[in-house]
Length: 476
Image (cartoon, rainbow, N blue to C red):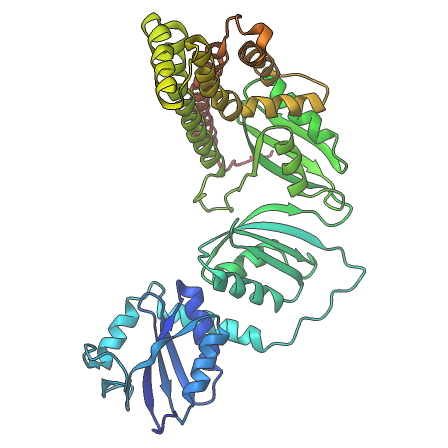
């Protein structure tokens, strides 16, 4: 099937477009076809409007859509007209009968409602098309030192967005590598600082319709890199000391300092020996959380406060785990210590087991089994963080509060396990409720602590914000 008019407008159905970057990819591919005068894509409507000035095969248009990573609709051509300015768009053969004719002036109005201004989109599409036609950049001289930088990228919604950014950087002189991770919204770039700077990379990404904020810029080989991390999970000076000890033992780390009140850590390191990912992994291995703190660009307010987000997430986790532990600990407390339940629950359970499975069941022993089943999730799910923190401290041959909690609750729990399952100890009392309630109360304390830290951090930031941004020095 081919078109046969000198000037023709086709409305095409395209499945899979989600954002402005998807529109750009389809438009860029379709505009390469001889005879295509203009292309207008609308991701929201799932349509592409193509203006032709000569005969063009529908197979070529289909191939352009497929090459861009999307699926042609069924039917692919939903409407066509003979004039881009005055003619009425008639439904193409095979189009749905309920699609009413639409004047092309309405198409122009629809295009104005797109998420992106068409003038800006056209300029960006032209820039991408220009880069696509350029040859690969000249190789960087071997005697030049390379730098690495990580950027937080916002606005990406699909793999097409990743492709647009990576393709643009691949055609940029001075950039040897640009890798985008859609899941983490990170861009890792390797470049020659003598040719291009990280600020230029930010500008390039911004021109494509996304936001880019430098996160951690590694200095040229032989120099010192510096990164600020947002830390979670600390609750005392031993925690901050443990993190500093872990980091200072890493090869390539020159200096590490942790601020317990601000829940941040600053690390100076040799980027040729150790990377930011290895630093974060070491902190997580010690039982704490760490993310790179994104600093606001100069003169621009930070749209996403990474530290506040990390604190909010930590508070939500603390709250969820406390509710889980409390919901199990309350019935455990009732069965273990409240007289009406101490006798009634095991007795009713013994009667149920006898009626269901037959035989005689000892109410006291069944009560121990029931308490074990209730206490185990609290000990090993809600209390897993304490074992992890204690293990991290043990590897560093030191101790912290997690060590104390893990030892105390384990003593009560495992003694109770022995009194439940070891025949010679079955007459001994159990203390399942002790371990469960200890963990629950500690989690309550951590929940209150997380909320207080968030408020303290906000107050400190507000105080720091009162500092003068500029100063005038009068000499003489």
